[in-house]
Image (cartoon, rainbow, N blue to C red):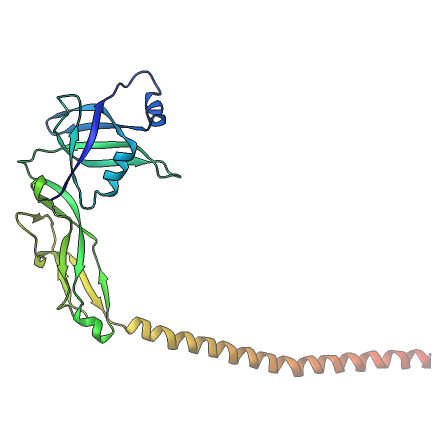
Length: 238
């Protein structure tokens, strides 16, 4: 797989507020650690870090460049990236050192290729999972896990156990979960007539209500007129 590079230098954690000062200078505070690596406070260039994080989907392994011999040449992956809630700017990064000769577990995205057979019959391709946990050597981390859906018909399901993984990449799972299927088009077909009938029924009921209300209103008006007309005659007799 492709490997990126990232300039990295040791940083001090004192005085208090040093992290904010670094950010104003275009540097991002970070921590380097690993299974056999003591946590070390470091700093990296903001623009360079942003570019590496953006490319992390296909450049997962990062080689550190540093004037400090103890840091230079180490290989890391991004374990965590903290961002500002509003602006989305990177505030801090966790760099996890890896041993190139030791397998590690990572999340890899699925990439669905081919045109499913069920689409010709009006079916809808429905991915059920977006990523898979795999174990492999750092230099063998794939960019994506390709899943061929060409032979998937309506109601067919591809499970994780039948997905092909390249090289020595090993999927990690407890249950044989479904990855992708093709749904029938029945949901979309039924929804339209039901909605139309509901609207038509509402119109008919509304028209009936209006038709019934008109005679009632006329009767009420006539009754009021009759009552209103008798009162003056009574007054004249007196």
